[in-house]
Image 1 (cartoon, one colour):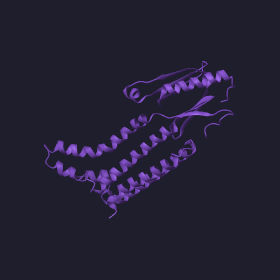
Image 2 (cartoon, rainbow over the protein chains, first blue to last red):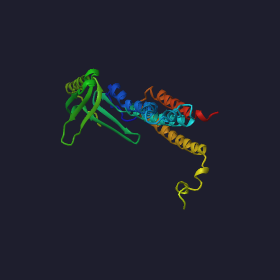
Image 3 (cartoon, helix red, strand yellow):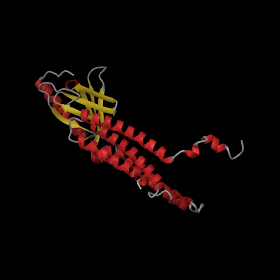
Image 4 (cartoon, each protein chain N blue to C red):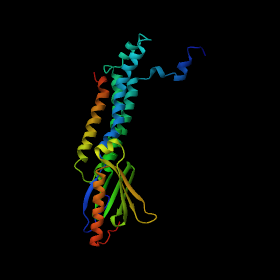
Length: 188
Length: 80
């Protein structure tokens, strides 16, 4: 791993990304934006044809036979493709890595804004899961929130995680094993 | 200044002589440079932070292939 080194005796238990449905939901605006310019001219032509007889002929020019229309659509779709690929990159690079000692949270906010933080399982006081909404309940994804000890200690959370209760149980199980073993905590 | 000279002056005396194809080629080159910079940055992140995943290379290949296909589609009207 580029972001962190595993300590001696430390092993990765599970890596978690957001649920695929969350990613699909993020792609929907791009699909809509790609389809809208195809649909709009026809709709406008049908609406305006009642008042302006030339409207249909005018909008007929906006076909793919017109090279400038192809330029517009090609560049528009290319822009949307780049944005969609950017969304996929963020989806793929954002993850939680659960080891038997700690949780590593990797957040890629943008290409030049990357945050990698890890928190020790022995410091985790509470793990909360939230499944909120119709699709989240149906497809079983939600938010996992881990609170660590200490006044200044932050709360780590990741939304849109598949099987949040399973993740919570896994974290709690690793914490229990850690306390049972009395294994010294890995340095961060 | 008469009534018909207004728009010409606003757009500049040489506006009528601008070649649409030259403007298009400049825009396309500009977009190509931006796309190239974006692709290099994206590839760097995928290869460095992609968690050694087998998805990284196929994802970048798909990105390049789809981008080129869309660029070719955009310019296909001027090929003949």
